[in-house]
Length: 634
Image (cartoon, rainbow, N blue to C red; front, side):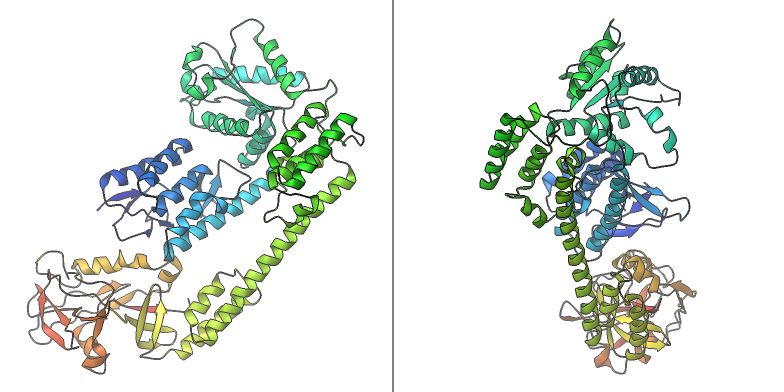
């Protein structure tokens, strides 16, 4: 059976073509699985997962994008691509022992807005889709927490990127060179992010919020390296590749490679095209400082606190601003942005120009349009500049726009919850108890949903009678027996056809047959982890064949089982009600009792008649009608 690596812990998982989710036996997490039909595709998924878990997110993303290029409907490939874009890995919480997502590539864009995540939802359904949504919600929760932390960080002028430790865990020469650069730059009044010092009081905390804040605020990145492999080290490359992406969006940011004891032609291809510094040359540090101070435009008495905007602008910038806002009225976003840039070239702290850039970026023709946007913009860089350089009236105004959007979002969220709440009540009133309970469980305690869940489960237990048809998991079931809140169910229709009792012709019992293994392993993956928890382990007694005495074998302990001959006769009132269908046609279905010999198994024919003589265990003509006991209150 093919092996796929668990996305959470890296453990081996057996998969099959018809299985799109499963539970890892090593970490206990429910995870989605790819649909693979050849070894090459399986190897690609495992290779991508290896790169992602090693922190090589760009390499992993290339693997998944290649899979998508060959099959754009592959939901799992889209999902994995989204994980790579945000640098997602799972880490075990030492307190709860639960695996939680952590984000190594934070972005102001939410994970749930990512194009590949949305494609994964589009091309999946049922439990797989719900698992994607469940995991995405956890990732967004982490994102928001990290973003909230990062917003409290003061901006940096320079970010120093380097490799701290070698393969033996010893400090690298790169680290000592980077520290010397750090001291030289801070002596010049620059605020510098150097992880060895900047993060030393953050031990035990997540570093990503501080790295993300520094990458986004820094006007320059200095990448220090003495070996090509150090420039390409996973976390070093993770930082400078992320900063390069920011450089493409903001022409004022600059990346400066600094090398020593190596040929500049050995720099990574993306860095080799940039102006670089040879750290072995005399005067290197003075040249670097001069270049950075030009970029950062640092004044001798630099302050990092919020600076008020200049209230009066010169005549030239006022005219430019007037033109910019006229372009905004006409919806000419590019021209409006360009004119605002011309203002900032003359007055870098002009808050009105940042307001114009914000409106151009968000396609707002007037200031009031900002309050009607679909998404809040408090993380926007231009908005942050307005808060930094604007006067109190302007700051109060733009904050009011954000508050208006957030209030509308909260109202919409409440309305959505209320609609779900009402739909659950309607489902209950229609007698669809399990559907009502499933909806209420999605509300996470909204109003009295927890109390209603308990009440609905009690009511369901009272209302459901022997012979009732209930929904559980993706199938409909007939209630065969009931004991307090426990019910014995059998599938209303066959769940699969052409399934042999045993994969080979041999003398077997229910305990040793392959159909029992399939039901208690592969078939169980049709149910969510919450649904599986409701399925009870049943003590299954295996009687001998009533006609020939063929030995039924040992008692087994199963989640899912087949009926015996006695049960098939006693739990159905007639042949007519014993008749089973598969996809609209009547069918034969297996029983667990052996036939006239141990290489045969009993079955029910299309007329509902129980055949104790049985068919050969390797016969592929019968369907499967599983039975199980559930506790719907659990």
